[in-house]
Structure formats: structure tokens, C-alpha cells
Length: 262
Image (cartoon, rainbow, N blue to C red; front, side, top):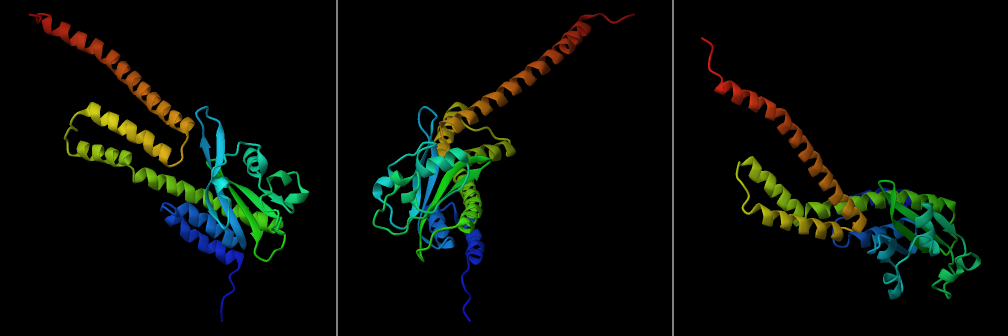
């Protein structure tokens, strides 16, 4: 007897994708699986980025089902359209009929009778890092609040999957490999050749890899600031230690020059 594939069963199967999120098609599979769980024909995953002015943007990075090519070129700011509204509010949104809503200007498919859609934020560390958009229910019915709540659960898993993807990207990067190499060299008591050149290589790899896994200029600057802060703290501790050791060294020198008592 065949087992009916319920949304709960599909959601359980979704967990198996978490370990595969770091692959080249990881984001695409997340969009496809989300569509299957919601029994829909279309799903797009938008991820956050920043421009040179540190202004947040969201753009489509993966999709399932037909999607106009121009959709991959568009960038949405907070408050713009459906995705922008969800990004700004941090709240999931159900639109029963887009042509009878305030978002009628965002409608892309006038010939499709299925006008209902869902949109939910994808979070990581309390911040909205992406948006899941779902439309076109396979049965043609209107999405309801149960569907919206199910998408909110899926968005939690997608957030975890994206986090895993970023961590795997960093661990597979040259930056992480160089850091591990340096640690191994320290354990062997050997010095790395040309430390200045190694430092520059690590710095360039650090920037490229953080940018590659989707971290924007603000996050990269924050990371660099943290490094500077750690260095500053280390220098302060070193200076204090030298200040404590200086009087002891002076006393020892004076003692060495003082004739012994007879």
C-alpha cells in the first residue's frame, strides 16, 4: 500500500537536504523542495546583498518553475513590492488574490488564473537574510493560513541550510586552509616563510571568500574591525606586561651593581 506524501512527510524529508546545502545546486534544491512541500509549481529564493553604500538589496538566487529572466536581474529594496515588504517587516505575507490587492502592480502572469501567493522571511542570527516566494498551487486552490504557517517552518530550515552553506564555503576556502596550515606549523615548532607575504595572501583570501559566500561590505568591515580590536587588546596587554616587568628589571640591575655587605 502506497504511503500518501503529506506536507508533514515532505517536511521531514527536507531535513536531509541540510547536509547537501553546500553543493553547487544547493540553493536550487532548496527552492525546488520548498515548492514540493507547499504543493506549488513556483518558488523563488531571494538572498540579501549590499551595495557600495551599504544599502540592503534582495535578488533572486534560485528558483523552481517558470520565472522571467528579468527577475534574476532585478534588485528589491526594503519596502518595495511583496518581497520588500516582507524584508522590511520581517513578517510572512499571504496574498489571496494579487489582482485584488495593493500589490497588483507586481503581478507578472495576467493569463494565469492562480493569483494566490505566499512570501516569508528567511532568518539567520535574528536578521532577515532572504525571502521565500511561493505561488501557483498545483490544485489551483487559494493558499490559506495553514500554508503560510507551513512556509514559515520551511523558512527556518532554509535559514539553517544557508548557514551551513556559508560555513562549508569558508571551511573549503583557501583562507581557512592557510589558517589550518599556520596552526600546523606552530605545532611543529616551525616558522612560516615570509610572514608578510603570507599575511597579505590570507587578507586577500579572507575578503574574497567572505564576499563569495554572500557576506556584504558591512559584514566584512565588521570582521576587519573585530581583528583590529583583538590586535589593539593584545597590544594593550603586552604594554602593561612590559610596564610591570620594567621595574623588576631595573631593581635587578641595581642589585647586580651594589657591592655585597661585609
